[in-house]
Length: 214
Length: 214
DNA sequence: ATGTTATTTAATAACCCTATTAAATTTTGA
DNA sequence: TCAAAATTTAATAGGGTTATTAAATAACAT
Image 1 (cartoon, rainbow over the protein chains, first blue to last red):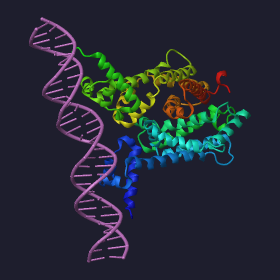
Image 2: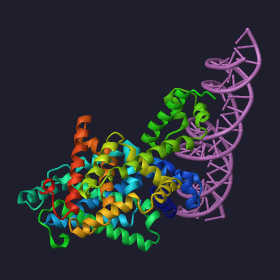
Image 3: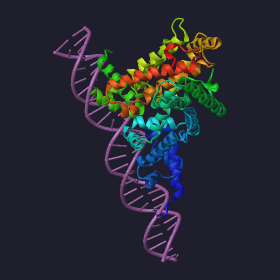
Image 4: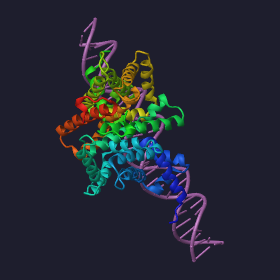
Protein backbone atom coordinates (compact mmCIF):
# COMPACT_ATOMS: atom_id res chain seq x y z
CA UNK A 1 0.00 0.00 0.00
CA UNK A 2 3.04 2.25 -0.14
CA UNK A 3 2.06 4.18 -3.19
CA UNK A 4 4.42 6.08 -5.39
CA UNK A 5 3.14 9.32 -3.99
CA UNK A 6 5.43 11.49 -6.03
CA UNK A 7 4.01 10.14 -9.27
CA UNK A 8 0.49 10.22 -7.90
CA UNK A 9 0.94 13.90 -7.07
CA UNK A 10 2.51 14.64 -10.41
CA UNK A 11 -0.45 13.13 -12.22
CA UNK A 12 -2.81 15.28 -10.17
CA UNK A 13 -0.76 18.39 -10.79
CA UNK A 14 -0.51 17.76 -14.52
CA UNK A 15 -4.20 16.96 -14.76
CA UNK A 16 -4.94 20.25 -13.03
CA UNK A 17 -2.88 22.16 -15.56
CA UNK A 18 -4.54 20.46 -18.52
CA UNK A 19 -8.09 20.53 -17.19
CA UNK A 20 -7.79 24.22 -16.36
CA UNK A 21 -6.30 24.98 -19.74
CA UNK A 22 -8.52 22.89 -21.98
CA UNK A 23 -11.44 21.71 -19.88
CA UNK A 24 -12.69 18.23 -19.04
CA UNK A 25 -13.85 17.16 -22.52
CA UNK A 26 -10.79 18.33 -24.42
CA UNK A 27 -8.34 16.66 -22.03
CA UNK A 28 -7.76 12.92 -22.34
CA UNK A 29 -6.08 10.63 -19.86
CA UNK A 30 -3.64 9.96 -22.69
CA UNK A 31 -2.79 13.67 -22.78
CA UNK A 32 -2.18 13.66 -19.05
CA UNK A 33 0.02 10.55 -19.22
CA UNK A 34 2.00 11.98 -22.11
CA UNK A 35 2.70 15.22 -20.24
CA UNK A 36 3.59 13.33 -17.05
CA UNK A 37 5.75 10.94 -19.06
CA UNK A 38 4.10 7.77 -17.87
CA UNK A 39 1.87 5.03 -19.19
CA UNK A 40 -1.78 5.93 -19.74
CA UNK A 41 -3.00 3.07 -17.58
CA UNK A 42 -1.18 4.57 -14.61
CA UNK A 43 -3.53 7.51 -14.57
CA UNK A 44 -6.35 5.01 -14.10
CA UNK A 45 -4.35 2.93 -11.66
CA UNK A 46 -4.08 5.87 -9.26
CA UNK A 47 -7.41 7.60 -9.89
CA UNK A 48 -9.51 4.86 -11.47
CA UNK A 49 -11.67 7.15 -13.60
CA UNK A 50 -11.12 10.44 -15.39
CA UNK A 51 -14.23 11.82 -13.70
CA UNK A 52 -12.72 10.93 -10.33
CA UNK A 53 -9.49 12.71 -11.06
CA UNK A 54 -11.35 15.69 -12.44
CA UNK A 55 -13.63 15.99 -9.47
CA UNK A 56 -10.73 16.26 -7.02
CA UNK A 57 -9.51 19.26 -8.96
CA UNK A 58 -12.94 20.74 -9.57
CA UNK A 59 -13.99 20.62 -5.94
CA UNK A 60 -10.67 22.04 -4.76
CA UNK A 61 -11.00 24.99 -7.11
CA UNK A 62 -14.64 25.46 -6.31
CA UNK A 63 -13.91 25.62 -2.60
CA UNK A 64 -11.01 27.96 -3.20
CA UNK A 65 -13.29 30.38 -5.02
CA UNK A 66 -16.04 30.13 -2.46
CA UNK A 67 -13.70 30.59 0.48
CA UNK A 68 -12.93 34.08 -0.75
CA UNK A 69 -16.56 35.14 -0.71
CA UNK A 70 -16.40 35.28 3.06
CA UNK A 71 -12.96 36.76 3.14
CA UNK A 72 -14.20 40.29 2.61
CA UNK A 73 -16.68 40.12 5.42
CA UNK A 74 -14.52 39.69 8.51
CA UNK A 75 -14.95 41.92 11.51
CA UNK A 76 -17.28 44.87 11.66
CA UNK A 77 -16.17 46.76 8.62
CA UNK A 78 -18.08 49.34 6.62
CA UNK A 79 -19.75 48.33 3.37
CA UNK A 80 -17.18 50.35 1.51
CA UNK A 81 -14.38 48.33 3.04
CA UNK A 82 -16.20 45.09 2.36
CA UNK A 83 -16.66 45.96 -1.31
CA UNK A 84 -13.04 46.99 -1.72
CA UNK A 85 -11.82 43.88 0.05
CA UNK A 86 -14.06 41.65 -2.08
CA UNK A 87 -12.68 43.09 -5.30
CA UNK A 88 -9.10 42.98 -4.01
CA UNK A 89 -9.37 39.39 -2.83
CA UNK A 90 -10.78 38.09 -6.09
CA UNK A 91 -8.40 40.03 -8.25
CA UNK A 92 -5.50 38.71 -6.24
CA UNK A 93 -6.50 35.08 -6.36
CA UNK A 94 -7.53 35.22 -10.02
CA UNK A 95 -4.44 37.10 -11.14
CA UNK A 96 -2.44 33.98 -10.39
CA UNK A 97 -5.19 31.64 -11.63
CA UNK A 98 -6.23 33.42 -14.76
CA UNK A 99 -8.09 30.62 -16.45
CA UNK A 100 -9.98 29.62 -13.32
CA UNK A 101 -13.08 31.78 -14.04
CA UNK A 102 -13.61 30.33 -17.49
CA UNK A 103 -12.85 26.83 -16.27
CA UNK A 104 -15.50 27.06 -13.57
CA UNK A 105 -18.15 28.62 -15.78
CA UNK A 106 -17.45 26.16 -18.57
CA UNK A 107 -17.77 23.10 -16.37
CA UNK A 108 -20.88 24.39 -14.59
CA UNK A 109 -22.60 25.23 -17.87
CA UNK A 110 -21.50 22.23 -19.91
CA UNK A 111 -22.24 19.65 -17.24
CA UNK A 112 -25.41 20.45 -15.25
CA UNK A 113 -24.57 17.51 -12.98
CA UNK A 114 -21.77 19.58 -11.51
CA UNK A 115 -24.17 22.29 -10.51
CA UNK A 116 -25.30 19.98 -7.78
CA UNK A 117 -22.06 20.86 -6.04
CA UNK A 118 -23.11 24.49 -6.26
CA UNK A 119 -26.58 23.73 -4.85
CA UNK A 120 -25.15 21.81 -1.94
CA UNK A 121 -22.80 24.65 -1.13
CA UNK A 122 -25.63 27.19 -1.26
CA UNK A 123 -27.86 25.06 0.94
CA UNK A 124 -25.11 24.55 3.49
CA UNK A 125 -24.70 28.31 3.71
CA UNK A 126 -28.37 29.29 3.77
CA UNK A 127 -28.61 29.86 7.53
CA UNK A 128 -29.39 33.22 9.08
CA UNK A 129 -25.74 33.80 9.97
CA UNK A 130 -24.64 33.13 6.40
CA UNK A 131 -22.44 35.35 4.33
CA UNK A 132 -25.40 36.42 2.26
CA UNK A 133 -27.55 37.35 5.25
CA UNK A 134 -24.78 39.39 6.86
CA UNK A 135 -24.08 41.08 3.54
CA UNK A 136 -27.77 41.85 3.05
CA UNK A 137 -27.97 43.34 6.55
CA UNK A 138 -24.95 45.52 5.88
CA UNK A 139 -26.37 46.70 2.56
CA UNK A 140 -29.84 47.48 3.87
CA UNK A 141 -28.39 49.41 6.80
CA UNK A 142 -26.62 51.69 4.31
CA UNK A 143 -29.77 51.98 2.19
CA UNK A 144 -31.65 53.10 5.33
CA UNK A 145 -28.96 55.67 6.08
CA UNK A 146 -29.21 56.87 2.48
CA UNK A 147 -25.50 56.41 1.84
CA UNK A 148 -26.19 54.01 -1.02
CA UNK A 149 -29.08 53.81 -3.49
CA UNK A 150 -31.70 51.08 -2.97
CA UNK A 151 -30.11 47.80 -4.03
CA UNK A 152 -30.08 44.19 -2.84
CA UNK A 153 -26.92 42.43 -1.74
CA UNK A 154 -27.34 39.82 -4.49
CA UNK A 155 -27.51 42.53 -7.15
CA UNK A 156 -24.41 44.21 -5.79
CA UNK A 157 -22.54 40.90 -5.71
CA UNK A 158 -23.64 40.08 -9.26
CA UNK A 159 -22.40 43.45 -10.45
CA UNK A 160 -18.99 42.90 -8.87
CA UNK A 161 -18.62 39.31 -10.04
CA UNK A 162 -19.66 40.22 -13.60
CA UNK A 163 -16.98 42.86 -13.85
CA UNK A 164 -14.30 40.74 -12.21
CA UNK A 165 -15.01 37.50 -14.05
CA UNK A 166 -15.29 39.02 -17.50
CA UNK A 167 -11.94 40.73 -17.06
CA UNK A 168 -10.30 37.31 -16.82
CA UNK A 169 -12.52 35.51 -19.31
CA UNK A 170 -11.83 38.10 -21.99
CA UNK A 171 -8.14 38.39 -21.16
CA UNK A 172 -6.94 35.93 -23.84
CA UNK A 173 -8.70 37.94 -26.54
CA UNK A 174 -7.87 41.33 -25.10
CA UNK A 175 -4.22 40.50 -24.62
CA UNK A 176 -3.93 39.24 -28.21
CA UNK A 177 -4.72 42.76 -29.31
CA UNK A 178 -3.40 45.12 -26.73
CA UNK A 179 -1.05 43.34 -24.37
CA UNK A 180 2.17 41.64 -25.26
CA UNK A 181 4.36 41.28 -22.21
CA UNK A 182 3.55 39.87 -18.82
CA UNK A 183 4.21 43.31 -17.36
CA UNK A 184 1.58 44.87 -19.60
CA UNK A 185 -0.91 42.23 -18.56
CA UNK A 186 -0.24 42.85 -14.88
CA UNK A 187 -0.57 46.59 -15.36
CA UNK A 188 -3.82 46.11 -17.25
CA UNK A 189 -5.23 43.91 -14.49
CA UNK A 190 -4.26 46.49 -11.90
CA UNK A 191 -5.97 49.21 -13.93
CA UNK A 192 -9.04 47.09 -14.38
CA UNK A 193 -9.25 46.40 -10.66
CA UNK A 194 -9.22 50.11 -9.87
CA UNK A 195 -11.78 50.84 -12.60
CA UNK A 196 -14.12 48.22 -11.16
CA UNK A 197 -13.76 49.63 -7.67
CA UNK A 198 -14.47 53.12 -8.97
CA UNK A 199 -17.45 52.04 -11.04
CA UNK A 200 -19.03 50.09 -8.19
CA UNK A 201 -18.40 52.76 -5.55
CA UNK A 202 -19.69 55.59 -7.70
CA UNK A 203 -22.49 53.47 -9.09
CA UNK A 204 -23.82 52.49 -5.70
CA UNK A 205 -22.89 55.12 -3.13
CA UNK A 206 -24.72 58.43 -3.03
CA UNK A 207 -22.20 60.17 -0.81
CA UNK A 208 -18.87 59.96 -2.56
CA UNK A 209 -15.67 59.34 -0.76
CA UNK A 210 -13.03 61.77 -1.98
CA UNK A 211 -11.12 58.82 -3.48
CA UNK A 212 -13.88 58.22 -5.96
CA UNK A 213 -15.17 61.74 -6.50
CA UNK A 214 -14.46 62.60 -10.12
CA UNK B 1 -27.37 20.81 -59.21
CA UNK B 2 -30.92 21.30 -57.95
CA UNK B 3 -30.19 20.61 -54.32
CA UNK B 4 -32.72 19.56 -51.80
CA UNK B 5 -32.62 23.00 -50.28
CA UNK B 6 -35.17 22.27 -47.61
CA UNK B 7 -33.04 19.52 -46.17
CA UNK B 8 -29.90 21.55 -46.57
CA UNK B 9 -31.50 24.37 -44.59
CA UNK B 10 -32.82 22.00 -41.95
CA UNK B 11 -29.33 20.62 -41.38
CA UNK B 12 -27.98 24.13 -40.97
CA UNK B 13 -30.79 25.08 -38.60
CA UNK B 14 -30.37 21.93 -36.51
CA UNK B 15 -26.61 22.32 -36.43
CA UNK B 16 -27.08 25.87 -35.16
CA UNK B 17 -29.30 24.69 -32.33
CA UNK B 18 -26.87 21.97 -31.28
CA UNK B 19 -23.68 24.00 -31.67
CA UNK B 20 -25.18 26.86 -29.67
CA UNK B 21 -26.41 24.51 -26.99
CA UNK B 22 -23.40 22.21 -26.62
CA UNK B 23 -20.55 23.82 -28.54
CA UNK B 24 -18.43 22.54 -31.41
CA UNK B 25 -16.61 19.74 -29.61
CA UNK B 26 -19.62 18.23 -27.87
CA UNK B 27 -21.72 18.15 -31.03
CA UNK B 28 -21.11 15.35 -33.56
CA UNK B 29 -22.31 15.19 -37.14
CA UNK B 30 -24.10 12.03 -36.01
CA UNK B 31 -25.99 14.10 -33.41
CA UNK B 32 -27.02 16.57 -36.07
CA UNK B 33 -28.16 13.85 -38.47
CA UNK B 34 -30.12 12.11 -35.73
CA UNK B 35 -31.96 15.29 -34.81
CA UNK B 36 -32.63 16.13 -38.46
CA UNK B 37 -33.73 12.55 -39.07
CA UNK B 38 -31.37 11.84 -41.92
CA UNK B 39 -28.28 9.80 -42.67
CA UNK B 40 -25.03 11.04 -41.15
CA UNK B 41 -23.31 11.09 -44.55
CA UNK B 42 -25.82 13.65 -45.76
CA UNK B 43 -24.46 16.24 -43.36
CA UNK B 44 -21.11 15.80 -45.07
CA UNK B 45 -22.70 15.63 -48.53
CA UNK B 46 -24.09 19.14 -48.12
CA UNK B 47 -21.39 20.75 -46.01
CA UNK B 48 -18.38 18.49 -46.59
CA UNK B 49 -16.77 19.07 -43.19
CA UNK B 50 -18.04 19.72 -39.70
CA UNK B 51 -15.72 22.71 -39.46
CA UNK B 52 -17.30 24.12 -42.63
CA UNK B 53 -20.80 23.77 -41.28
CA UNK B 54 -19.75 25.23 -37.97
CA UNK B 55 -18.04 28.21 -39.52
CA UNK B 56 -21.16 29.28 -41.39
CA UNK B 57 -22.98 29.45 -38.08
CA UNK B 58 -20.10 30.96 -36.16
CA UNK B 59 -19.50 33.78 -38.63
CA UNK B 60 -23.22 34.54 -38.87
CA UNK B 61 -23.49 34.86 -35.10
CA UNK B 62 -20.26 36.80 -34.87
CA UNK B 63 -21.44 39.32 -37.43
CA UNK B 64 -24.80 39.55 -35.72
CA UNK B 65 -23.13 40.46 -32.45
CA UNK B 66 -20.77 42.93 -34.07
CA UNK B 67 -23.48 44.64 -36.09
CA UNK B 68 -25.08 45.76 -32.85
CA UNK B 69 -21.97 47.53 -31.69
CA UNK B 70 -22.59 50.22 -34.25
CA UNK B 71 -26.32 50.23 -33.74
CA UNK B 72 -26.09 52.48 -30.69
CA UNK B 73 -24.04 55.10 -32.48
CA UNK B 74 -26.34 56.35 -35.20
CA UNK B 75 -26.94 60.05 -35.64
CA UNK B 76 -25.61 62.73 -33.36
CA UNK B 77 -26.83 61.48 -30.04
CA UNK B 78 -25.51 62.30 -26.62
CA UNK B 79 -23.23 59.82 -24.85
CA UNK B 80 -26.01 59.08 -22.43
CA UNK B 81 -28.29 58.04 -25.28
CA UNK B 82 -25.53 55.97 -26.87
CA UNK B 83 -24.91 54.09 -23.63
CA UNK B 84 -28.58 53.41 -23.06
CA UNK B 85 -29.07 52.30 -26.64
CA UNK B 86 -26.04 50.02 -26.46
CA UNK B 87 -27.36 48.26 -23.37
CA UNK B 88 -30.89 48.07 -24.79
CA UNK B 89 -29.75 46.65 -28.11
CA UNK B 90 -27.63 43.92 -26.57
CA UNK B 91 -30.19 42.97 -24.00
CA UNK B 92 -32.81 42.69 -26.70
CA UNK B 93 -30.78 40.56 -29.07
CA UNK B 94 -29.39 38.36 -26.28
CA UNK B 95 -32.73 37.88 -24.57
CA UNK B 96 -33.83 35.84 -27.56
CA UNK B 97 -30.37 34.24 -28.00
CA UNK B 98 -29.52 33.47 -24.42
CA UNK B 99 -26.72 31.01 -25.02
CA UNK B 100 -25.03 33.13 -27.65
CA UNK B 101 -22.64 34.90 -25.24
CA UNK B 102 -21.28 31.69 -23.79
CA UNK B 103 -21.13 30.08 -27.21
CA UNK B 104 -19.02 32.90 -28.60
CA UNK B 105 -16.69 33.11 -25.61
CA UNK B 106 -16.29 29.36 -25.49
CA UNK B 107 -15.35 29.04 -29.15
CA UNK B 108 -13.00 32.02 -29.07
CA UNK B 109 -11.21 30.76 -25.98
CA UNK B 110 -11.12 27.06 -26.83
CA UNK B 111 -9.99 27.51 -30.42
CA UNK B 112 -7.48 30.35 -30.84
CA UNK B 113 -7.69 29.82 -34.61
CA UNK B 114 -11.15 31.38 -34.52
CA UNK B 115 -9.78 34.53 -32.99
CA UNK B 116 -8.37 35.28 -36.39
CA UNK B 117 -11.90 36.14 -37.37
CA UNK B 118 -11.93 38.64 -34.53
CA UNK B 119 -8.61 40.16 -35.61
CA UNK B 120 -9.77 40.55 -39.17
CA UNK B 121 -12.92 42.27 -38.02
CA UNK B 122 -10.97 44.63 -35.79
CA UNK B 123 -8.51 45.47 -38.53
CA UNK B 124 -11.26 46.15 -41.02
CA UNK B 125 -12.79 48.60 -38.58
CA UNK B 126 -9.62 50.34 -37.49
CA UNK B 127 -10.00 53.43 -39.68
CA UNK B 128 -10.46 56.91 -38.29
CA UNK B 129 -14.18 56.84 -38.95
CA UNK B 130 -14.58 53.56 -37.08
CA UNK B 131 -17.04 52.90 -34.34
CA UNK B 132 -14.29 52.97 -31.78
CA UNK B 133 -12.88 56.31 -32.94
CA UNK B 134 -16.29 57.97 -32.97
CA UNK B 135 -17.05 56.52 -29.56
CA UNK B 136 -13.71 57.72 -28.22
CA UNK B 137 -14.40 61.22 -29.57
CA UNK B 138 -17.79 61.28 -27.95
CA UNK B 139 -16.39 60.10 -24.62
CA UNK B 140 -13.46 62.53 -24.55
CA UNK B 141 -15.77 65.44 -25.41
CA UNK B 142 -17.79 64.64 -22.30
CA UNK B 143 -14.64 64.25 -20.23
CA UNK B 144 -13.57 67.72 -21.38
CA UNK B 145 -16.96 69.13 -20.43
CA UNK B 146 -16.66 67.44 -17.05
CA UNK B 147 -19.93 65.61 -17.39
CA UNK B 148 -18.20 62.26 -16.99
CA UNK B 149 -15.11 61.23 -15.06
CA UNK B 150 -11.90 60.60 -17.01
CA UNK B 151 -12.34 57.26 -18.78
CA UNK B 152 -11.48 55.75 -22.14
CA UNK B 153 -14.09 54.44 -24.56
CA UNK B 154 -12.61 50.96 -24.42
CA UNK B 155 -12.90 50.89 -20.63
CA UNK B 156 -16.49 52.03 -20.79
CA UNK B 157 -17.33 49.40 -23.41
CA UNK B 158 -15.59 46.69 -21.38
CA UNK B 159 -17.61 47.67 -18.32
CA UNK B 160 -20.87 47.44 -20.24
CA UNK B 161 -20.05 44.20 -22.00
CA UNK B 162 -18.87 42.58 -18.75
CA UNK B 163 -22.16 43.33 -17.04
CA UNK B 164 -24.29 42.33 -20.01
CA UNK B 165 -22.45 39.14 -20.94
CA UNK B 166 -22.20 37.77 -17.41
CA UNK B 167 -25.93 38.20 -16.96
CA UNK B 168 -26.52 35.70 -19.73
CA UNK B 169 -23.58 33.43 -19.00
CA UNK B 170 -24.65 33.00 -15.39
CA UNK B 171 -28.35 32.70 -16.21
CA UNK B 172 -28.44 28.86 -16.24
CA UNK B 173 -27.00 28.78 -12.72
CA UNK B 174 -28.96 31.72 -11.42
CA UNK B 175 -32.24 30.46 -12.81
CA UNK B 176 -31.72 27.02 -11.23
CA UNK B 177 -31.84 28.75 -7.87
CA UNK B 178 -34.09 31.72 -8.17
CA UNK B 179 -36.11 31.57 -11.36
CA UNK B 180 -38.56 28.90 -12.36
CA UNK B 181 -40.94 30.22 -14.99
CA UNK B 182 -40.18 31.93 -18.27
CA UNK B 183 -41.99 35.01 -16.90
CA UNK B 184 -39.67 35.17 -13.93
CA UNK B 185 -36.65 34.94 -16.21
CA UNK B 186 -37.92 37.75 -18.41
CA UNK B 187 -38.63 39.92 -15.40
CA UNK B 188 -35.17 39.20 -14.01
CA UNK B 189 -33.52 40.14 -17.31
CA UNK B 190 -35.52 43.37 -17.42
CA UNK B 191 -34.44 44.18 -13.87
CA UNK B 192 -30.85 43.37 -14.67
CA UNK B 193 -30.90 45.63 -17.73
CA UNK B 194 -32.11 48.57 -15.66
CA UNK B 195 -29.55 47.86 -12.93
CA UNK B 196 -26.75 47.87 -15.48
CA UNK B 197 -27.93 51.16 -16.97
CA UNK B 198 -28.10 52.68 -13.52
CA UNK B 199 -24.70 51.38 -12.48
CA UNK B 200 -23.00 52.60 -15.63
CA UNK B 201 -24.68 56.00 -15.69
CA UNK B 202 -24.03 56.68 -12.02
CA UNK B 203 -20.59 55.12 -12.20
CA UNK B 204 -19.45 57.29 -15.08
CA UNK B 205 -21.41 60.56 -15.15
CA UNK B 206 -20.63 63.28 -12.66
CA UNK B 207 -23.81 65.25 -13.30
CA UNK B 208 -26.67 62.91 -12.61
CA UNK B 209 -29.77 62.83 -14.73
CA UNK B 210 -32.84 62.79 -12.48
CA UNK B 211 -33.62 59.29 -13.72
CA UNK B 212 -30.51 57.95 -12.08
CA UNK B 213 -30.22 60.22 -9.08
CA UNK B 214 -30.65 57.99 -6.04
C1' DA C 1 -39.93 5.47 -71.07
C1' DT C 2 -35.35 5.92 -70.32
C1' DG C 3 -30.95 7.73 -69.78
C1' DT C 4 -28.80 11.18 -66.94
C1' DT C 5 -28.12 13.53 -62.92
C1' DA C 6 -28.98 14.29 -57.96
C1' DT C 7 -29.83 12.43 -53.62
C1' DT C 8 -29.63 9.07 -50.08
C1' DT C 9 -27.92 4.98 -48.02
C1' DA C 10 -24.98 1.40 -45.75
C1' DA C 11 -20.45 0.20 -45.11
C1' DT C 12 -16.09 1.25 -43.82
C1' DA C 13 -11.32 3.32 -43.18
C1' DA C 14 -8.66 5.49 -39.97
C1' DC C 15 -8.38 7.58 -36.31
C1' DC C 16 -9.78 9.09 -31.40
C1' DC C 17 -11.26 7.85 -26.51
C1' DT C 18 -11.80 5.28 -21.42
C1' DA C 19 -11.17 1.50 -18.74
C1' DT C 20 -9.61 -3.09 -17.82
C1' DT C 21 -6.72 -7.12 -18.24
C1' DA C 22 -2.84 -10.01 -17.57
C1' DA C 23 1.82 -10.12 -17.71
C1' DA C 24 6.26 -7.98 -16.60
C1' DT C 25 8.96 -5.48 -13.57
C1' DT C 26 10.34 -3.24 -9.39
C1' DT C 27 10.12 -2.61 -4.47
C1' DT C 28 9.83 -4.22 0.04
C1' DG C 29 10.08 -6.83 4.33
C1' DA C 30 11.20 -11.05 6.77
C1' DT D 1 17.86 -13.75 -0.53
C1' DC D 2 13.55 -14.41 -2.03
C1' DA D 3 8.67 -14.50 -1.91
C1' DA D 4 4.93 -11.39 -1.59
C1' DA D 5 3.16 -6.99 -2.70
C1' DA D 6 3.15 -2.85 -5.37
C1' DT D 7 3.95 -0.67 -9.55
C1' DT D 8 4.30 -0.30 -14.43
C1' DT D 9 3.63 -1.97 -18.96
C1' DA D 10 1.58 -3.53 -23.45
C1' DA D 11 -2.46 -5.15 -25.29
C1' DT D 12 -7.08 -4.83 -25.99
C1' DA D 13 -12.23 -4.55 -25.54
C1' DG D 14 -15.83 -1.68 -26.74
C1' DG D 15 -17.22 2.57 -27.67
C1' DG D 16 -16.90 6.96 -29.94
C1' DT D 17 -15.63 10.25 -33.82
C1' DT D 18 -15.14 12.40 -39.11
C1' DA D 19 -15.00 11.67 -43.70
C1' DT D 20 -15.16 8.91 -47.82
C1' DT D 21 -16.70 5.18 -50.71
C1' DA D 22 -19.62 2.69 -53.88
C1' DA D 23 -24.06 1.18 -54.47
C1' DA D 24 -29.01 2.13 -54.38
C1' DT D 25 -32.75 5.06 -55.04
C1' DA D 26 -35.24 9.12 -56.59
C1' DA D 27 -35.99 13.05 -59.69
C1' DC D 28 -35.78 15.01 -63.99
C1' DA D 29 -35.61 16.15 -68.92
C1' DT D 30 -36.08 14.74 -73.47
